[in-house]
Length: 223
Image (cartoon, rainbow, N blue to C red; front, side, top):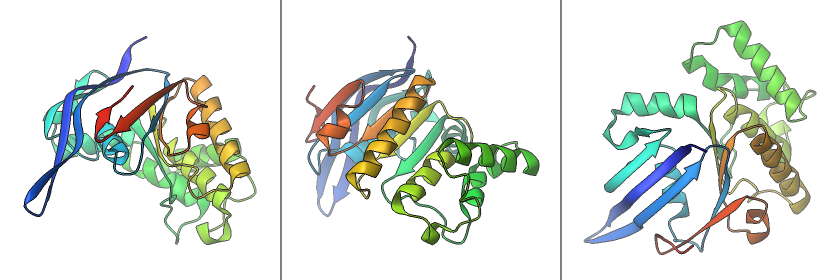
């Protein structure tokens, strides 16, 4: 199985006043295509920083990060934006939907920056919303949806450009346990369809649904 993401001796430092804080320290990981990985650890362990590095939202202070064989540490911002748009789908704890857009429009939005026609965008967005069980919510604004429905819209939006990798940052954090379980079952189905899933969570029971767990502490991989 080919690697989709590799960290080679990756460090990420931040300046905090007069001091330097190492959020990620000497990390080496290898995630294969089609894997389902949960990243866990206490608050401040570096989970979100690692997620930002994986998704090309941030660059390492030292080391190399490979996404589908390409070293993203040496790319321009415009090239990183293209990679984020095509290869990675993001799902956030707070959903990050645009409140003035309908569910359908939120899902269509990422496709505007790729080479989809207006008709293709609508057709694909409708198909994705049906797949996540929201065929009756196309024209609802986010404040007219429940938390679980908003997260389903966010999942459909993450899939809009058919990315290889889905990054989910605490995807069940704002949901009740029943809805959270449904969202994780959806991730499992996506993984069986061939998507690589990388999920940050503080919930060990949720993490156990993944194929592999990476534990972080003080910016270092424990196991």
